[in-house]
Length: 442
Image (cartoon, rainbow, N blue to C red; front, side, top):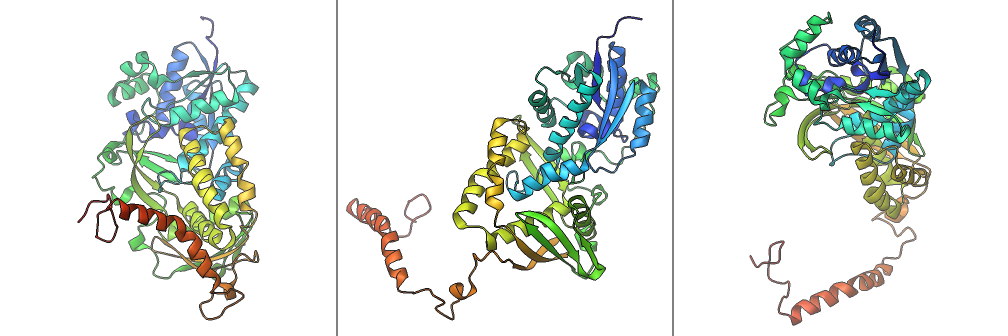
């Protein structure tokens, strides 16, 4: 036998979101992409160790283990990363109200740092010189994973088959992959009924490629896996209360079920279950990928949608105006981009995340909500932080606020506005006549 080229840690099946591979969106079994890659790596002379991360996806891990070992993996590792995923990625993103392009809650992006860190730990332990994955050359995940690998282990070498001409020319289409799987005796379950790819974790599930690449194609009703159709959701609203401490959910109470959740992971799982039942968390968008192309994606983020709505609402009651503005303009936007673009293991991420605790010191209190046919409805909120003064805000009493004080406030605020208006009058550009938003008369 020829000498091995080295040991490779392969992100196997759902462990690296390889189901999102557009080349394989017509192959039902999510492990087939990396099963073929595993066989190919062995064919190339590498010794392969298979890795999977449990980040809350619904997957048959034992079946994946058996298949990886049957194909030829020397070892198989399954790492349970759910708690780390929730506490170190999901909850900081919640505190910062992270959102990409004002709509996407970053469910795929959030899982990548914990998966990459789990892989590097195994790579170190097993003496792997290489890591490999099944990401395509057109997607975001190749960037996210590889930047994370290098941020954790700068000397690691990456084998990305879908960017190697020898590989992607050999497996240019579905039939070539199926033929190779048959040659290597890799069992493949085929389907033409669901031509799209998915990526799932505890936070969400995404759908893309296949028929979804036409942005005007309405997703079939049976595509949505997690949530019921809002039109088919219960007619009775679901009441619940979420308690926050320093911007983190610490308690969820569901009165009609007589249940209370206080563990971080259990809170998220409970909210997921409630949101799924009531059709909460579906979106269908076209987004801008980091590499520069547009991509259509459909997402279900059930529990995350509830938590974000409640957190944003409580901040209105408890967070100082200027602190909130600075956080929104800087931390929220920049951390969202960092997550989406795969820059988690970077100095800028460390810098921005360090500002989160200071912004969340006062975000303490309760939010009462209802879930109803796809909607998260805020019913009320309370806090002992004291930034809201009911008497001071009331229109029915003075409450320690002198209305005459506002006269001086308006006078100071109007100084620059008056100067601007006077300058326009001198130039014959008075604003009395109606104009469009660009200044032209209408």
